[in-house]
Image (cartoon, rainbow, N blue to C red; front, side, top):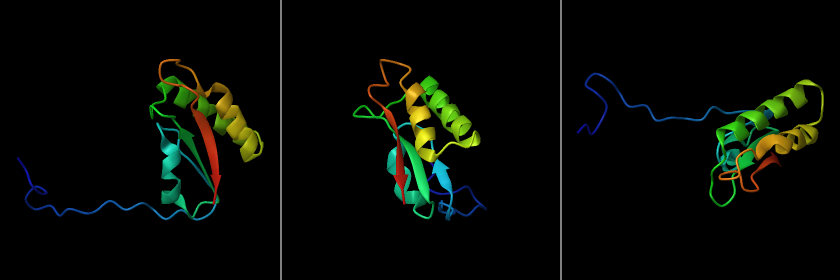
Length: 105
């Protein structure tokens, strides 16, 4: 079992890039809690996956596409979040009242 990096390689800790301005949107299971990692962004959009912390892949793909399409059409971020929420809950087994949330910074 390895306890460190392979010989000749150094371990480099992962660092989050500093984001300043704009909107960060992450469509992944329970991604809403990542908001604090992007505090330099004007807005953070993520998914609240509810108590089970699961959201289906079809739901994530559909809501992400709806969000981007709405923003690209010139709608407000609130309208884009609403569009994303309209298609998020695709699978009854996992998408139980999941929602896309906006966290302005």
